[in-house]
Length: 334
Image (cartoon, one colour):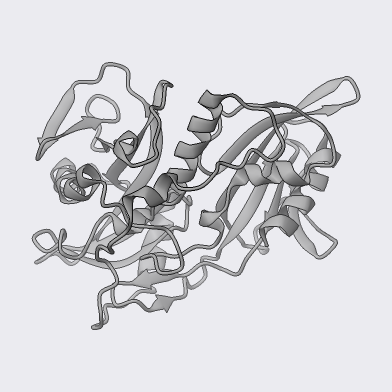
């Protein structure tokens, strides 16, 4: 419900404009998503790890806000604005339905998910669609990236999917209509590219969270690629005789100094919020995010300020390591 409250506030800042629609397909070379050598930042990895890292990069190259086009929405409703304000691999949309005063709020996300024998909920064309759990109104569409040029089979339980659902609303009929609307794009793999010309461009979303391995001042004891996600990097570093578990995440974070309870610090020009109890540090690495209107304009988000950030966690120990790493990461991603 807190997320819905924020979305309502953000959508209230939007307005519907006439103009050239930005939400449409672009011709993209399908080989782009797996093109180029996979960076390993000086770490030793095997061929399976290289494949997993290639899939993580491929997902980062997809713009989730471009999956639902204006043409696909023609028989459903009109998108007022889009944003990637809560997670970089997610797009939140506000939708105006014909004859309704209230807007609906939907989320589309490119994720890795472990199927556990769920039955097919329905077919969208020839594409099977699954519920995230029995009775859920969130739906999963297989994202068959292995069919793209240059892709190797991903031999792990977690596979790529597109998740679509409504936010704080149990309208399964509308969620299914949205799933059917994006299915042709997902099935054809004519996927929208995340770059400066994307439906919703975001510079931090194009970056690899594991690039932080290149600026560590200590040895990496292990790199847990299987647990890493497109915007989360998990690894352990050596400290004396200990191995400190670290997670570095790239994500938007709320910026509200009036209500902030974490310690505010500044080091080497980097603005930090530090929680000494849980050894977590947030470093902001960009200006406040805005929402994008269907016509292409950007609008502010009023009193709700979301900023791109690097978040470093160590599980409650070695806070000095977390703070040092957050400063180094902020300089890398700024």
